[in-house]
Image 1 (tube, helix red, strand yellow):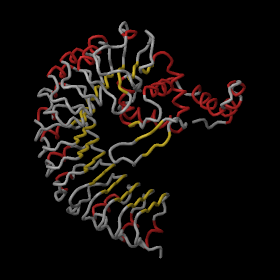
Image 2 (cartoon, one colour):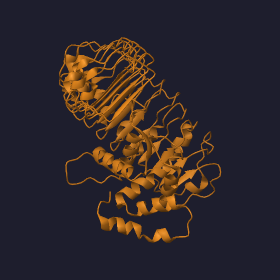
Image 3 (cartoon, helix red, strand yellow):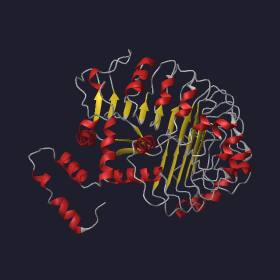
Image 4 (cartoon, helix red, strand yellow):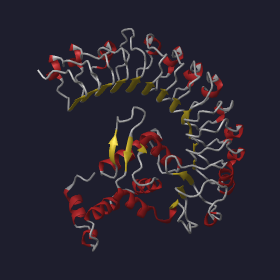
Length: 472
């Protein structure tokens, strides 16, 4: 952000203000865009691959930037994901993103582009980005990133003007719920575009991923999520040694992961839904580069792999809608890099044995929802915790005592849909770092503690749908 007077004067005197264009807001955006460093310009232009009014998952956006080689690593030993977050925050600070609902989803942070910013991104992207729909006549040979919208995806044919493009980097289905019905369409894409870095064929419903996918040796991002028909992945997927992100969540018929998935030595992000009762140790434990693991809607899963202990780079672990899972393996205490833990809608899972994960001292973000209870021993291991969300806990009466261990670090606390939650504890006043407190749909909450005035860092207090809360 510009802070010096000469920089603001330079913006004020920019020649674009003298243009005949009527839309001063768009002109202001263009002035801001022109002053971006080149690395941020190309990242903003890449956002044109999303349709207007699309809600964008921030983690996904950063993973796409990395897959396309848009994140440049400095000399410092810093992860690309952290640099990507810095890029996003810089664009956010300049108002290129809007509507960031940081906690509207407990699973991930979301954002949107204003329509004018989307127009700017399209303008900046030029011919390298193309949305293919039923009205598209010609696709430039210079196109590198193609998003299919309402194109007829029921057959196997590719647009004729795309057939000679040998340097395509991205194929994406940009609209939720719009995907191909034909595995032959996917096979034709693979055969034609061997230089692909990103293949997003989510929301499709073909039965089988072509074996030829293993030939995409440059592929870094593969999304097959929300396919209700696919039953297995080809073993040759294990040849994708450059693959960084694999998303196969919400694939309810998927029988399991390939047995040698541990060969994917570059894999950093894995989202999975399978019918397996457990994951073989060698399937998950060998993914030593893994940064995030999302286990979603695995209705048969009864235990997590002991191989988790080898995921020493893992920063995010999310376990969502796994109704038969009953306990965590003790080896979770070895996940010393873990910063984000989400446990949601696992109705058989109890947290009585928190001492098993006392090694998780780096956890900064903890989301717990849809569990039968939240009893635990008096654990004081969460000394780095900054964010806590408690949701859908029918037995929760007050805050768990172990939260006092984060009294100097906790910045955000949200409690929602906890029908037995009746009072905040007196020791709430010890949470001296708390900046935001939200309580929603807790019908038995009747009072706030007197020590609320001690929360001197509190900036936001939001309480709604708590009908018997007294204002006295």
